[in-house]
Length: 215
Figure 1: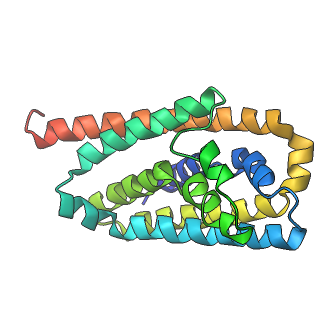
Figure 2: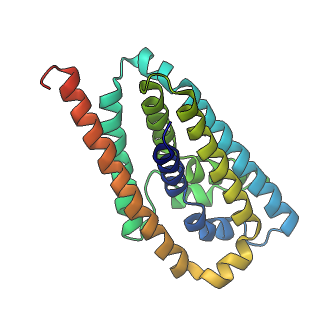
Figure 3: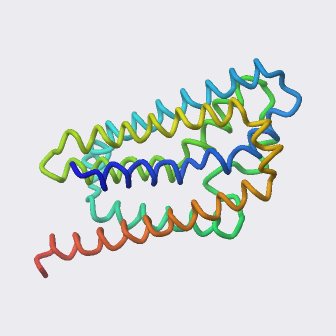
């Protein structure tokens, strides 16, 4: 396992989950909540995010085999999805794979918003699921490098821990940062994510060409 792979996995997962950029949404949905209730919602968000990403990281390979999906095809499709999310982030828009206005309006039960819509799809959305599945597939393709696989799970855990800390202090952070500050951070994360997406697409294309025997 290389340090570059582990660092790349963490940065990519953190960028697509985007806890800093999600703080304004968290504050809007939990407006009027007590500090204790906000903490409970933050815990649920983190638990849901961890479970969802772990499940798809663990069983992603089986999903590929069941549906006959090749790794190159998933890299290309996943890269295109991630690029669409990154494009929205860079233009200050909320991706359609994330939280919609309808989802926010349906958030009626106070604690349950930590599961839907904040846990899924805001934090653990299709983009985050795709990212962890691609990184695990890359790690297992490297002669089954166990340390590389573990580094992906470590990236998930670090992202969730940082997310919990940020959500715990979200009110103070939002007051200092403001919506414009969170938006600026999202745009930077979007740029990084776009680069990762292009890397996935190119890797998938070259791997498909090699598998077809052209190289």
